Length: 332
Image (tube, rainbow, N blue to C red; front, side, top):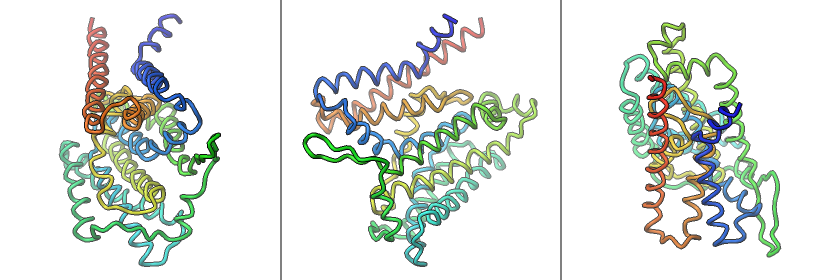
């Protein structure tokens, strides 16, 4: 029992929690209002889309792959869906989410075909799909920001779970869209923890050949993983569009490295076969804290990218060294 507690306190998830607590205390010393409901609301809004992306990326990495196409896929899902909605006078939020999920599914299927059937390296395959999706968006759909959101869809941006009002009269409202990453996290946790599919994803990521010998259908699992990632990227893109109340064809581009870093910092091994939903949540929270609160610590804006990169390097190095130590201990 004591050994189990020690392992838990020294786990990757625990280390990230320690860093979050230390950083929060530091920010709290500078800004006494940091420890308040308003911070929780602001942070929740900041991580809403990133966390959804991160859970998808975590599952892909656990399966032994990697996906750098989700920002481009999300962008084309968001932009194409809004174009379709405006062209056919669609003003139903569920239909819009469904259209985006289907478009994302198509690109996820393309990723799966390239990786599972043609056996292209996941990085190369998803990088190619990213270029195709981004190029198609800009070449065939347009480059202008669209802010003409249909009324009923736009109304979701003003739907809240609760509203908190400070003593100064400032209001902070938690958007109902936060239910999307919560649902994705719960579904991913249940799937990875309690289903044969989840065991198969871990097995394929650990050793695809061994998983095949054990009876797992490796190609089927890869198809499910990448198709699901595409669909959920589409859903996340609509959440972002509603939250921002506009569709920008390029605003999500470039977010893949930060998402992957958050996933790896949360304890997911980049080589596959290991990772957890809770660790990924902590990794995303840490990145969001750093990005949104460095200015409170007096860090100039032009140094923020450097500091974020430094934390990512340190965090991922710790994860890598721990994985190597565990691997060496198992060989002894």
